[in-house]
Figure 1 (tube, helix red, strand yellow):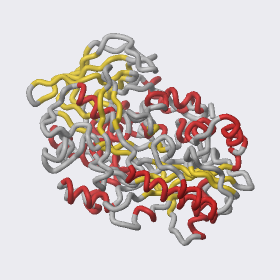
Figure 2: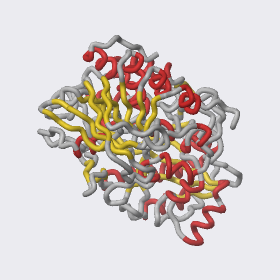
Figure 3: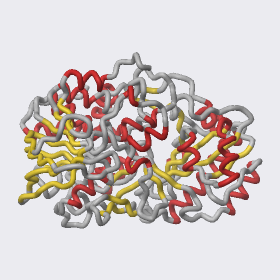
Length: 536
């Protein structure tokens, strides 16, 4: 792989303006047309469009700049360098482990490439409850199409690995529909290490797609630089104060002050609301940081009589959304079925067990299949999300309760996953729950699952998707930002990331962010008087 061209190394050699960390020193001050906080899905799309329009932009990223020659397919390297809090970010009560990117490209650099348009029922709910009537399926389609063309999003054409095929053939035997995942890849080597950064540059993350274009058009990128706060003057932001940080988050020097005509906050749900909270941004209706959602995710392990090798091949290529549509969107919580890659640190760290039991699970890893169920959050009174809060040092934490309503969905998902795994030929199944055992038959699994105590910490729940906290709505009483992305009380600040979502989705969120960011940036260019730009 050393012979694979590295677009980041080549760009730096061409003279990209990159400051912070091991790169050029941070200047004391910068002035630009638009300052963008973050470099993930929303920030990357926004940066390319603004830069191509001829605007002077500065991109501020808390994490490091890493590229393909540094992606070694090693979990120990990836989690500590590329994820928030070293891959150990958790909810305030420590119940839910939250995986979010913290590097140039954000979560797009480390996700599993699943690209799904916003489900129509979610868009309809947003229209009904939040006045976003112009964000229906037809209205959003052109913006999704641009993002799909730009990022090579298409159905995965290669046969699924065995980990995914268990879901496909088990569901098929039960008469349940499955679908092929659409992935944002080009020339994929089918290695299976997407979550550790793509070593071949096949994944069309912001790292290798939009951000290089923005930098080639003169954008300035600040890395290992945390957006500490925005300074306010009346109804406007007067400056962004950012501080240099080490990989562990410790401040390493004096801050830089960035002045701009407009500011785009795109640090992701949790970090974006936190920045506005640290800045004492106007919040007349007490909405900032509230209605922050996850896709709480339950797991089910199955053992087969042959190697599954769940670490090899595209980690996500088959899904089943049947159980999102068996009842009303605001009824009992629905869930989407996928699989997760069986990498040692990830699987052992999130699969429960200690001592000899955990050692046996490690020995069984080659023949282990891992199915997951992503619960749809935010459509029911008992799934009202959580709240982003600030610790004493100003760092953010999500206060989020795994309620009985959600745990009911977890129990139902355990049973569904067991049924599919046995139908696919599993010798034994085990829900990822501290009280669960290996069940050798479906009847045994049904009885075992029914007897589980459904409480936090016993039922293992994680999430790689955080949404909401800066809700977009048709009026200020229901949202933090307007339908065009602009803050309701701050005239020169917009939000372009997943914190805009009024609910969770029931689908992996990256394409929703891409589509929204494309649409919102188109409108921002008009408001700034810049030339229009088509993403693709």
